[in-house]
Image (cartoon, rainbow, N blue to C red; front, side, top):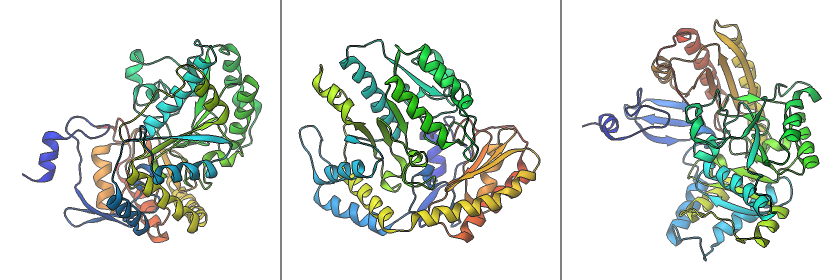
Length: 433
């Protein structure tokens, strides 16, 4: 029995029915190319969901992992510590905007956000205000697939709306309507300001993705909005959680999405590109003031602890990935990709059924008027030698930073031709990314 047949019998894929279709067997990945079992090579336009920013089989990262593997693949982090974790936490605090004191390492972005929410709740419990147990966020956001994170994803147009009755009920403001390049006006944030006042005694924190809303709609909004939100949180004395899992480590053209606004969070979540897409690792950074409250009040500890927390192999990969960001011209590469995506995707705007085209950093988005037909679209991209995974009404690409101009053109040509060929067929629409 071949691999695809075995997969169909036993494997459940993300955002898919029990038997996923269409499905393609990948046997190798190197640079920006995926090799399929039939020998075809695909230019990867997704960076493995934002993560593989340096491409695949990056020698420095693999060497760091191999060196660490020869010493110690894993050890529990309760009561023990090790150099890869400590050095990584020190570096993240040094790199991150703001005055963070501590880093909590976890296994995935969803867990990093879970930890952030738990930190905010425990902070107010420590201050003797247990009624502050709700979060304020904006529509169009996405923060993960676990239960606490689903509750702060868009409750209407997101991927988890049918879980509504089982989730905590948080407070949702209007999505930022001011585009990235547009002037910000106070009216753009009036709904947030109103809700901060109305729910002042209930709120534990404000949470959102800085500048780019990812899987909730691939929407880019004004950095001035984010700066004003920071001011409002300061005035209300409410912690600001910034989910930088998708925006961290250069994807938007700055090291962190919040750098566009020149602000910092009280709690920041990192993941995805943290290890260069090599291994799963995430981090939650916490400010000094919040750490002090949790440390000095009952129970005196943050009540969370993943089994594989601070895995030494993942920490070694992360340190090597950060080394590459320090020593390679990633800013110029991302700027060049943005320029090329902006120029070459613009032709899609004239295609029937296209609602919008937008780019920021190494992200290019073509938004359609109707959901894509995944049963036709996914094979069509593979036939054109690229790997692009649309969802909903969005056909988007986020290539590795090392993608050549020729390969970027292969991606944009494929986006144009596939949309022109198959858009408008609404059967078998994708339920998620």
